[in-house]
Length: 188
Image (cartoon, rainbow, N blue to C red; front, side, top):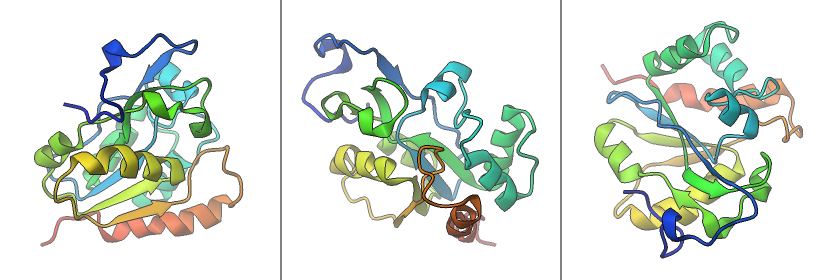
């Protein structure tokens, strides 16, 4: 069951002038070692039904550079490359009300967290959580952690790959994201 930010379910929330958006299922295998979390897919991703579908989002080019695949290959092949690299991908939020794509527009009173207890039970080898930006970290710490008794995995915030966060060059973001590579393989 998803952790809730408020003591009400999505079904009993008051009607909103903006529609509720919902995340995708996790991309994860039981042997995953690393979990990368976003906050909530943007409008381009929701329309495409794919994580990080905005053409200027740096996520797939960064993952391609780290894992050695072509960022232009079909989405299903890119997700297979993540899985083969021991990387799981998900969002902190199951759903929320947000006009547009900006994380800053998320109505915090409407946020419902994803079921991380279930994910960690299905993927017991995850030993590090990486946040794709500050909003993902904030959503996880506020809405997920209170429901995860005994959670003690190391967590690291990485610079957001969103085109809205243009304060760092691609090369600077890639350099920071190299940290993911140290945890992604199963021990021998």
